[in-house]
Image 1: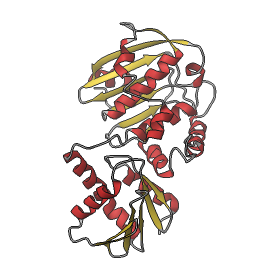
Image 2: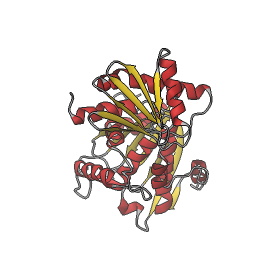
Image 3: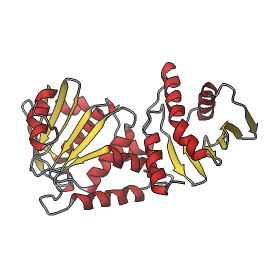
Image 4: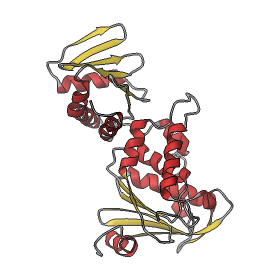
Length: 321
């Protein structure tokens, strides 16, 4: 049996598979518990997926529990009342490794055929991030920046920073966050934005010195952020906002590149098009939580120019295109 850490790593990789709605995994050792906040008919969804993958499948139903045996030594229990799925049995771990990614992929494909893919983000994460694209469109914020750039207030820069990264993640772009200084709250927000947009095939890198201008070490900031993720609770249910599986997935999918510099920008590219937001503000509470004003400039440019003029000088790309 693999260690708890190895199991968490494997489950996080499986969780990264695109799904039509948000799900979560909890490893209880002798069983895997799969939960969701989605309010639709989750049990029927799972049953249709299993029937398609296992046409000869037989199942038993008693009270609120549907019991399925997709393979020898594997038992799946679906609770019609809570929508919780439990996977247990002597062979449950091997089956999870070999088959559950296929289950998720089949479910996602089925829902796309029906054009019923819902937001995969956990509503509690969205609320914590204070994001609501129906109210605050990214383009509305960008339109507020004067042509050629200008001096903007700290709260505007923070909203734009968060909304733009969310928008880029949402369209599956390659995203680069570059700053000499980031605090645990901003890093926590980056991880939450990643979790919120799981399944869009985005890539993200953080370029930052190993030691910031104030002497703070990034390693220590990361450790503090991990503790925050473990401690932060949802207001209503007081459950953890980020599970171990989601946290592991976020940590493994953020690429960190250490370099010494003093500039700040976020940038993204997809295919031949790129965007970059440059600012004099550090992505840190010293700029975002105080009444400071900083320069902000937004530009669209070809991907080759972004790589040549912004990423290559920092060692983020290895070839000067």
